[in-house]
Image (cartoon, rainbow, N blue to C red; front, side, top):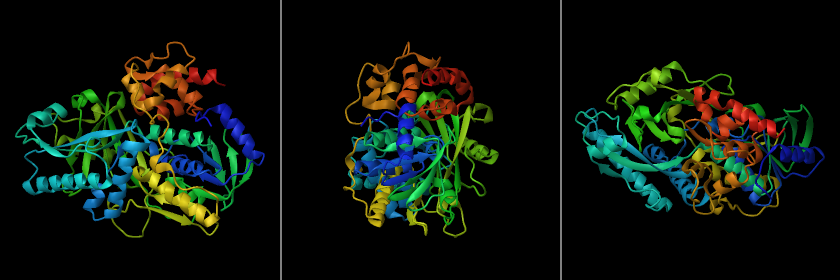
Length: 505
């Protein structure tokens, strides 16, 4: 089956569900966890419907650091299990599932006078432990190079705005970096659709039980009931809305967005220890579209869960103050061109303390109603979490399914080597699928940028509508592309997005 998602397919699949087409698994939630569950289940031969009340990657899955962590932080806190799993899953993504979307990112810790010998030794030991984790996970050094010490001159080449006075070189390590988190969600969802899953955005779920759920098409207002072998709640920080017995403790992570020129167009993530902390850092990471993302915070976020969290003034000040300890010229709020915040769906263990110290492990919980919920976890482990959830659903509901296949299953775009002759930015976002993005375009000037100075092409906007399920302007500019992270850039492309949406209505 085709992996193309669009309005016509959505209408046909909603109609089939309303008319009683049989379903084995209904997945509620279109973030990375829900999409991963849909892919795992569909690739095992199960009949799957994923429903999301907004768009793919609308929630936490688009607000991350765009990192595929190897688990070093968790090793330092004694959580060997999650550290090893993270390293294994990072290697699977980088070498098998999505080598087109995940690449090695250099992480550079400048050795400044403020950093004592003990702290330097601790960071170096941590990087060496990270090398061990990588080797244990079977990820080759050709994919993730070994850590090492580099000269002051090399530090300044990689991060040109670093403080230079008495700079004593730097420590360099590598981790996985996504071209974009929302692109990963889209690729996973489309691959699930390729295996037959129904991926239905702007469809709200209510009155859920272990074997049924009421669905409402938010674009038409029509509602109907669906029966299924299993209902899985993968709504992240909103999980309590589906199963009121769940207790989460959301944690807010904030990032600031800068023009890369503000940091001298770095080629490494400037990694700055947070003063007074042993195992936490702030990262200034070079990203697509000529930007640098500076993050991140870890703050309690009690109260109602908003659709789009907002950074606090205190978090903005904290990030600027921390990064300025490593810069030659201080940055201020006037240099910030965008900002975003996301909520981590951490499990509330009832223990007092900082959210930074809470476990990032996940849990699969069956409610009295029979709903199967997955809570907690982290983006890097989405595939492992999905396997765990589907294994549990198959066992509890006695579904007829094959074994998990996702460990060696390439996502769309990741099966062959990158093509040549196309813009590098296009290849970075679509991998082997890039030629099809262009050949499928019916628009004029498909390789022309959607706006001057923005390296997203008109063909990509069209593809978002014809193949990636974009139904509204925000789907295109805020999630299929990340232009919308900078408000002034967003304003420049809204009319172009509306043009492509109008052609498909």
